[in-house]
Length: 211
Image 1 (cartoon, rainbow, N blue to C red):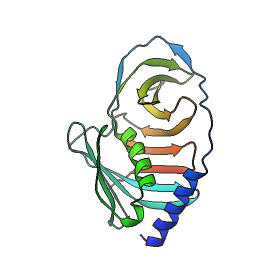
Image 2 (cartoon, rainbow, N blue to C red):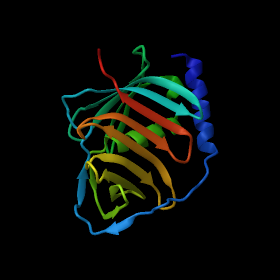
Image 3 (cartoon, rainbow, N blue to C red):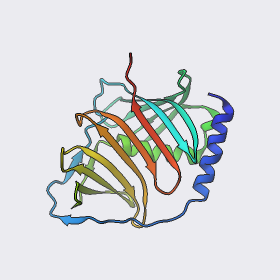
């Protein structure tokens, strides 16, 4: 990983956040009677498994590739490591719903604005259980609303196969980012995308199949 590549990506990331524009949340959902009060995410829950993904981060057309490794180290906390494709460590942190600890990070990525964005993204990705306050539906999914501080999470469960399709993280006026999941068995997600709606930031995780 060339230092100049990381620095160039970081500059574009900061500019993307500076020139963000506001939008509004479009909710074409039909309210329903609540049929459950909680939802448990099936992914990243096995403490015996190292979840390893090839990773690509795109910011306004600039790419950074590497490896993402997540492991559940206790009931509330995951350890996450980002490395280059050659195994050089870029970032190592521990994250739960209430705590965030950086174990190590290369100086080029040690920027508060970047760390806070990744913390928010991966805290939602690794969140295990959601308390449900409202329920909706559209043509293809059951939609569950869960409060998240001053924001809301909308959990989309496919009507066809009951798999978790996506989670939308939003304020009262606009969507912030969306997690998309592709899973064959609803136990392990083979592909995950984190797409920000208000900036051109996309993180793609593809399950790393060892030969």
